[in-house]
Image (tube, rainbow, N blue to C red; front, side, top):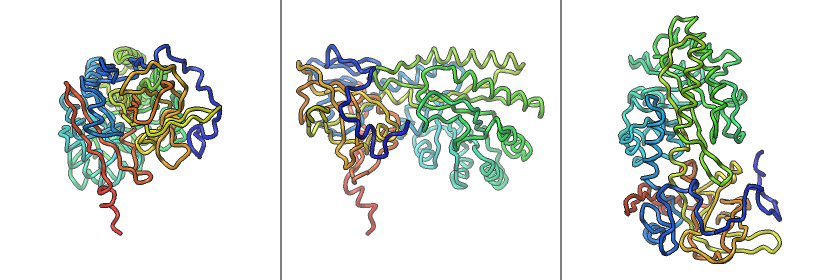
Amino acid sequence: MRAHEAGALHGDLGSTGPSWLRTPDDVNALVPQLWPKTVKRGATGAIEVGSVNIRKIAEEHGTPAYVFDEADFRSRCRAFKEAFGGAEVFYAGKAFIATHIVRILVEEGLSLDVCTGGELAVALRGGMPPERIGLHGNNKSVAELTRAVEAGVGRIIVDSFDEIDRLSAIARRTATRPKVMVRVTVGVEAHTHEYIATAHEDQKFGFSLSGGAAAEAVDRILAEDVLDLRGLHSHIGSQIFDTSGFEVSARRLLSLQAAVHDKHGIELPELDLGGGFGIAYTTQDTPAEPADLATNLMRIVKQECAALQLSVPHLSIEPGRAIVGPAMFTLYEVGTVKDVDGIRTYVSVDGGMSDNIRTALYDAAYSATVAGRTSTEPPILARVVGKHCEAGDIIVKDEFLPADVQAGDLLAVPGTGAYCRSMASNYNHVPRPPVVAVVDGESRVIVRRETEDDLLKLDVG
């Protein structure tokens, strides 16, 4: 369902909240699956992350701010790396990328997906070995493709016949043989929001399997003989909680792989099943553990390869938001509290849709808590909204907060590591917040806060 054009849940007056949202026994309690691993309430009642009091972070770095738990992020990198064994784990640069993030990925042995020249620039600046970079995108420019080839990017996921032509021309001109994968639209629609379900036929990504375009793309690449075809790639969506869709996807991909073997006499050495694994934004979400995902996906691939009498290819996966999403939360300060009698309580904070567009764009659900203290007051159902000049400027549609929530309170929204800073804007000319990394009792800025001077520098008059 699409959000109302005037904003998420516009006109939803008198709501008592969604059916899954339960009145908490303790409004101060933190639901563990929603928060980074080092987050807890300290002796003063304020949240601590990486042993740093959230009040100290607000004093030193201001609000709003994205707070990044580096230890949590590293533990998630390791969990996927260990669970999938010999498979290659690609971090999704589009979820959130910064040079510090890239350096961590290098240290933890992960690879990196990028989808624009800008993301590629950050990847290279952060020291990611080019052979561990994959370049996605449905409309890569000649400049982006040329830069990727010259940098030695390890794989380019081709997405159209135009791109095959462009890349082949670049390969001839530079006397190189770029490694490529064919993105296949396998016709599996994940049970997710229509805007982020990417494997059904009516969308902009990939080559259709059912229509024959995927097989034609393979034929054309092999006929050109200037590109190194490594394998097939698919992606069935995002915020996925089980592996049932991957079973159908793998079966269809490997059937194409078998057809390529029969026609051309080669076995493609690699297979990428995508990923897009889900995280917990609210108590209704139940994400799978990396070990369980790995067990099921590896079983699916091995079974299908055995049935088709194919060698098991080198597998790649793309966990997506599952690595960085839970490792970050956004810290705000409450500015106003407005009790609209008979409708709801609106809690306004000093950020909004410029730092988290997902609620308005995707109808996404989030959680929140008063972070700077505890309360003995009973919970009330509230809506957390931003400061922008939009009725749909909503951050958290429904959440129980203490009845004494007030101006000056610090409020934290978990699960904002993915697609919040990356999709942030300067709507209403609001500067974007900083990203503050916390680890071992220390905090430091890894992406600085924008200033009004930054905004005015772009305005050349």
